[in-house]
Image 1 (spheres, rainbow, N blue to C red):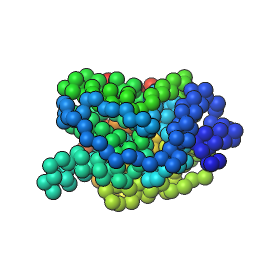
Image 2 (image 1 turned 180 degrees about the vertical axis):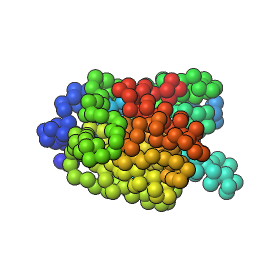
Image 3 (image 1 turned 30 degrees about the vertical axis):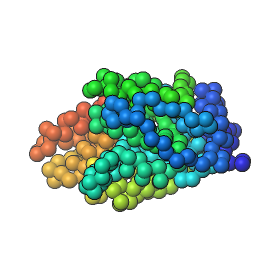
Length: 378
């Protein structure tokens, strides 16, 4: 087979869309080996296991010839998602799914709630059965555990997926031992970490360069006013961060399609850059779930023409608050053009006081230190 993850990676380097990076190359070599092993792969039927804390087995067996997957971890902007996406795009088995880990856990909660409504005795097992039926290969971006509800689910869920032969490739900013750090009842979460380390090949992507920040490090972060000069600067940043033609990006949110007209794939990250006007993002009937989906898909977001806000455009202002919250929590790189500085966007009338928090977040997001390191319990 000529269409392999390594072939695509090397082509990107030859074309100058990626800079040579020894750490990335080593990670791709591991993914290529997994790609080769997955040819003609057939998952085995699940086996029963004894139960321990949180209702799942502490001693997973290692069957001869089984394939677990790979866990790629390292700092932001190192190219983890890009490597995983090249691997997923050329996977030799089907069905394959590539999903942001946060979105995946929301989906699992929905499956568990549905199973409980049907009074099933083991909702997690039912969720695992449906997930395994939908994908033999699962590729997760940004694995993190931040709450006890997810911590109580993932152990039994992943054990059941592995027992059904599901192969998992995931990225994370942290080594498995750092997941859910200082979390409530973390000692009961440790068996899941042992399961991950037992089943998945760990690879530390320890390259020194943050490729996203390199591209935009010297670019202005907040342009004011939003005039012709600001638009020209946005044009230059758009070409620098994501060369190539624009294409639409469609996000699936609770069965609806949210379409963004201007997006470009990020060759070095495997995610997207999105460019949109304030009206595109905030004058439409969008909500928090839509902005969470955007934050999950886009590594870079360029927002143009943020106007002065007041009670007269309160609906748009409220959506803008939701948008900034989603991008802030996801630690996305954001560039703005606006009618005024953040603290002067909404200065009087109902809503001005509440907007102070959003203005503070924008100030932080336009600083040279953004994005920060992930939280300690991530």
